[in-house]
Length: 373
Ligand SMILES: NC(=O)c1ccc[n+]([C@@H]2O[C@H](COP(=O)([O-])OP(=O)(O)OC[C@H]3O[C@@H](n4cnc5c(N)ncnc54)[C@H](O)[C@@H]3O)[C@@H](O)[C@H]2O)c1
Ligand SMILES: [Fe+2]
Image (cartoon, rainbow, N blue to C red; front, side, top):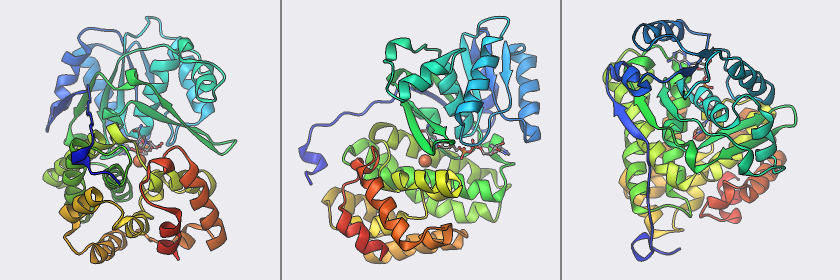
C-alpha cells in the first residue's frame, strides 16, 4: 500500500461546529428567524422539554416530527414526509434533535420534501439526483455517537426487503452542528456503550481505509484513544459531565475522520447483523473490530503507525487489549453469540468484502478468514 506521505490527498468538511455545555442555547441564533421543522423522538422526557424551551426562544416549529424510530424504515420515512408536507408554512430549515436515526431522517426530509418516493427512487437507482430537493439542516446530536452531524449521508433501511441503502449527497452536510454534552446526560448505559462503540468503529474504520489521509487519520487516532480511555469509565459513571463531554468530542472527531473516508469492513459486516439478527447498530459494527484489526496488521505502514499511536507498539497484544475493552463493556466479540453459525458468518464476510463499504477496506479476505477462525 502507498504511503500517505507519498500520495496527493485532500480533506474538507464544511459543517460549522458549536461545542460545549449549554451550546443548545445557540440553536435559536442558528435558526435565525427561519420557519423550521423539528425532527425528534417522543420516547424520553428530555425531547419534549427541549422542544418547549426552543419554542420559547425561537417560536414554535412550523411542524414537529416526533415519532422517529431507531433505524428509520421506508414506512416511517414515508409517514414523516407526509407530515412534513402538511406544515402550514413551508420550513426553510430542518432542526434534527436526537441520535443518528433523527439526523438521518432529517437528511431524508431535506432531500425528499413531502414525497418520500423521490429518495426511494434515487437510492434504488430508478431516478437521478435532479428529482431531489435541498433544505439546510441544523444537527443537534443527543448521543455520542454516530457522527451524522458532520457527514453527508444517511442510512435508510428497507427492513421488509432486508436491504440497507445510503443516501449520499455533498449538500447533505448539515449547515451547523450544535453539540451539547449536557443533552447526553440521560442516555442509559446500554445506549451509551453502543453509541460510544459506534464512534470507535468510525475512527478505526477510517484508518484501515483506502481513502485515509493524514487529517482523517489524525482525527481518528485522537477519537479512538479517547473512547478507549473514557467509555469504560463513563459506563460506570453516567452522570459525569466531563466524561460525557470527552465522548461527545471523540464522536465528533471520529465523524470528521470518516466524513472523508466512509467506513469499511466492520460496518459492511454490521448491516447483515442488524437486518437479519436485530442487533443494534453500535454493537453490530464494533464486535468484529478485534478480528478486523488482527487481519490488517502488517498490511500498511500508515495503518500500523496509526494503530500503534492508539494501542501501543505491540500490535498483536493491542488486539487483545481492544477485545478486553469490548468484553469489559459487556460486548461479546464472537459471531456465534449474535446468532450466526460459522458457515453463515463466512458467507457474510464474503458478501461484506464485496459491498460498497467493504471495498474501502485495505485488508484481504484470507487474512480476515484466518482472523475469525
Ligand atoms: N449518517 C451517518 O453518518 C450515520 C453513522 C452511524 C450510524 N448512523 C445511523 O444512526 C442510527 C443509530 O443512531 P443512534 O445510535 O444515535 O441511536 P438512535 O438515533 O437510533 O436512537 C435510539 C434510541 O435512543 C434514544 N435516545 C437518543 N438520545 C437520547 C437521550 N439523550 N436520552 C435518552 N434517550 C435517548 C432515542 O429515544 C431512541 O429510542 C442507525 O440507523 C445508523 O445506521 C448514521
Ligand atoms: Fe456507524
